[in-house]
Length: 230
Image 1 (cartoon, helix red, strand yellow):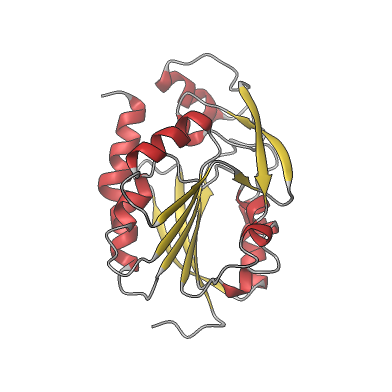
Image 2 (image 1 turned 45 degrees about the vertical axis):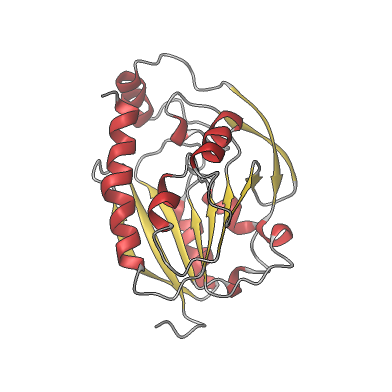
């Protein structure tokens, strides 16, 4: 089993499963999945009986094709091959051999974690391979949508703050947010505290941390205090 398969196995069989199990007690009818990859989180989350609709965003062209194949039978998933950003336009995505870590953020080539990852993947490339993708904002995309009882999941490899900046007008309508926090300096200018402060400013509180077993990141659940959560 190669390194990517090990990561995906841990994600699917343990990490995502325990997050979904924790969320089962909440009233959630819709999911906005920013950074869907191949649908690993979605496969577990779709076990929710009350889910009415899912919006899945994945900018990688080849990975989006796999996402489509993996979830083609589910008519309640609306899939979009674009990235969410702080503004509408275009941006370069950097493609990594471990496709779940491809990113719109600028890679920090001096990162110790990057060197370890290259060794594990047997990859000596500079991770600069990429292409231009279209971007939209959360506010633009969902300006006409009902966001009641929504879970927003953001897993975009260091680009989380940009996604949040594009949600300034509508973020108050979201009840639940799951967002990734990295523990290593893998991307230039990465500062999770900016995302944390943004969420606090918009009436969210940190409710639960889910550390990934390899200890390189954690997913954080924030809850909007403007709503009565049952």
